[in-house]
Each structure stands twice: as structure tokens, then as C-alpha cells.
Length: 102
Image (tube, rainbow, N blue to C red; front, top):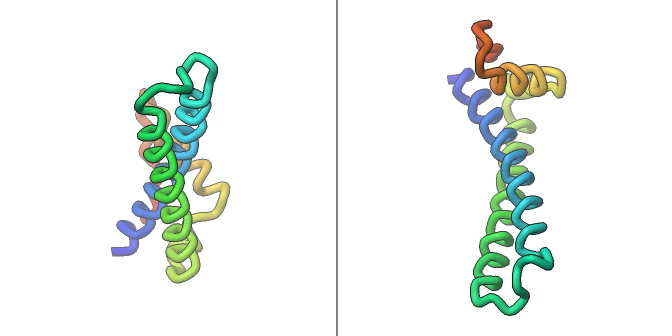
């Protein structure tokens, strides 16, 4: 279904944004002076961080391929449309109908 493809593309875009924020937050925490440099779990956290970077790159590749191959995604994934949908998505107390492409 066309609507499901567009929703999936939006989900991938917003999850990439959340992953990027997650990477920035935890990288700064794990490499801060408050976190002991000889902690036993430092390597585990670094490994998890790298796995998240790899997942972010894979999601970016999927988004690129989705945009490149599907015409309906090209039509509904303009920058202004993505920003508008994201704003509507995160306005929780609003009773307006959501701006979801048909």
C-alpha cells in the first residue's frame, strides 16, 4: 500500500533523528570526565555505540533507496512536508487532524 510505504519512510527518518540524538548524548556521557576511564563496562558501551552508528548508516541507506525507487515517496518526502508532518506528529495536545499523506 502506498500509504504504508510513506509512513515507513517517515518512521525511518524520525528514528534516524532519534538515533543521532541518542549517539550524541551517550557518546558525551561515556567519554566525559565523570565516567571512570578504567570502568569494566566502558568497552561494552563503546561496542553498543558503534553498533548504533552502523544501524544509523543502514537506516540512511534504506531511506536513500526508498526515496530513489518509489515515486510516491519522492512526492511526499519533500523537506517542508517532512517538517510539517514531524511538527504535527509531536504536537500531542492538539485536536487537529494529523497531516498524513494519503
